Length: 339
Picture: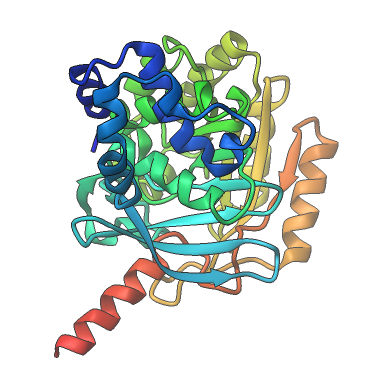
């Protein structure tokens, strides 16, 4: 269900824009928001009040937790069921964040990612995206939402931007704490700066070599690393937030001196942060994770050369942390049961 459809249904019942906002705000902020407030029945039109129980039940049914996998780092990886039986993954992050999925599957087909191995199955609606945040908030506080789960957000732009606007306006989440992650789609660069809520931007860089980028991200837009950084720099100056460049560190692939020199040439002096994330090993794929000591030395060397570099560990390393792994395992389990 799209958020625009919810608004249309409420409007048909006589809800004015302020009434619609109250209903959606109560949903995304949850029970804690309701304490000490006048009940909605005090001022909503009678047809809306009468329809609320059914609408609340419908919203509650958008997603359901299928399984939960707490990590030693304070994260919790969730396998989330959708109403049609499809599944996506969400991750409750340390320090009050949640990572949500925007697609079932993915069309980009990154070589090191489990999600894209089966292609794109369907889009996740804006209501289902927000419902992942509501599910997370029922388990712990959420002050940051990152769109880095399953899928390429730029390939589901209308739904993702609808969700971002609601989260930034009604969910009491700072705009800079809504992080839109993309491999670099021109449509995203065109539209992100036009919205009421302008999220922070994370760009998947992963290499400074165009030939290697084409191998690692085979169906990403054919932007060179230099072009990607140019678009990122413009958006950073527009919003006042530094761009977060994502670099999945792959042993023997993009961890050599040539790549480090390329990073310095690309990013030194830019309004940017380089998030370097050692690869989360997936047994089915050939890529390997470098040692933490090597990753730390690379990050320190880049920082010393003028590139603000943060070494990060993918949340949930001990609970199949690679995006798509839980869903893939669940799919294998279902197949075995049917065999």
